[in-house]
Length: 405
Ligand SMILES: Cc1cc2nc3c(=O)[nH]c(=O)nc-3n(C[C@H](O)[C@H](O)[C@H](O)COP(=O)(O)O)c2cc1C
Ligand SMILES: CCCCCCC(=O)C(=O)O
Image (cartoon, rainbow, N blue to C red; front, side, top):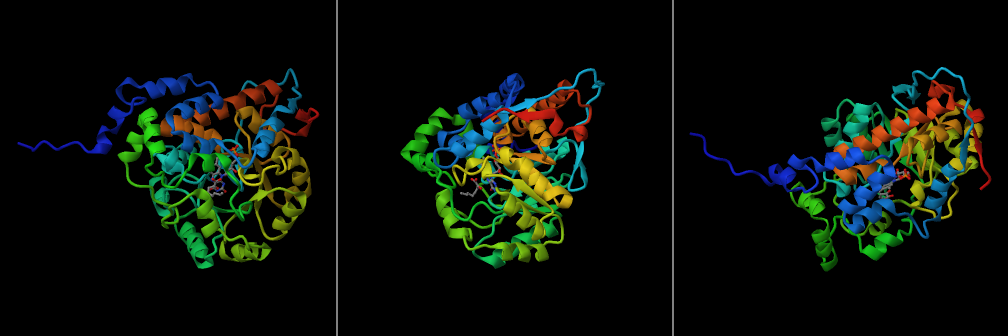
């Protein structure tokens, strides 16, 4: 007779989560979400306020984030009629490798805080959907573990330059040994951006037990059941972090990094090198001269310098300046597939999304990320068909105009 084994907490988790499990409530809610904004509303209900605000929020008065989103509202499409759009092809190449769409899942820190399925869930969706995914230095799954759990997908590693350069070199080496395809150097974070929501909420990594968090636990039981029944957060770098996000950045990140460090990285990393956080034409030229294979026109989703340039607005000028010397990507404020189409029409080889997939993750783990990806791709395909363009590669500036700001 076999002894009856006591179930582990992690096995009980699906039954304890009010939103998932046998009733399939999460699935039904996700299926009813007809836009990324709907996923955001679900995420807001599920996640504790401090976690939702960390994800949703930006720096200062959040002008940069608002403007980034509003810029997409300024784009007007110029459709051509009587074109054969019986089949629409979103596929393209990114860094010379086929991609199912001009879309990349951006690096995001502390992803397992949004949902314990975290980075592997996001990477699995990216792999299944045929898109690249960038693991952040501040990710909560180690470089090696992600590679082992999602061996097939296109994995990029995003690097923050730390004060301890030997530790940065070690990260680069580990990413190379684990088969990451490209390195993304983020250059817009010399010091922490002033995240007022995080300060007001008293957010710490990992979330600490205070009167406020206990009260939040009562309001968001699914999130806490999840957190308490899985392993503690691990970090991409295998370092241990504790404190506020601003403290971590001030302690670890190197505000003295210069173009010389880009030159160092260029020699240390043999594969494709992407510089993320470029915000002027002059810097775009400089980092391409410094050896970048691609740049991301980005203000970090408005999370660093408030009043930073609006990525979509400077994109055409940057794309013209760079020409075919490097690929140009853009991010910030993208919440729909039609935003992705607008970005490509204005000169981006690909668009990165951060919050769009994080809202899905917070709303329903891997299934939520998949819903976000499906929505973005369906919307992009529909937009393209309505524009009278059968292949995204044929999209150009002749298909858009910007309404006055
Ligand atoms: C919660 C969160 C965490 C982020 N963490 C990182 C990070 O660790 N490294 C990085 O380069 N960018 C990070 N970003 C910025 C994203 O890579 C991307 O530039 C931004 O999210 C794009 O704007 P969007 O969220 O409106 O799509 C983060 C963004 C969010 C929302
Ligand atoms: C203020 C920078 C925080 C670094 C960790 C994650 C990240 O980049 C973010 O935007 O949040």
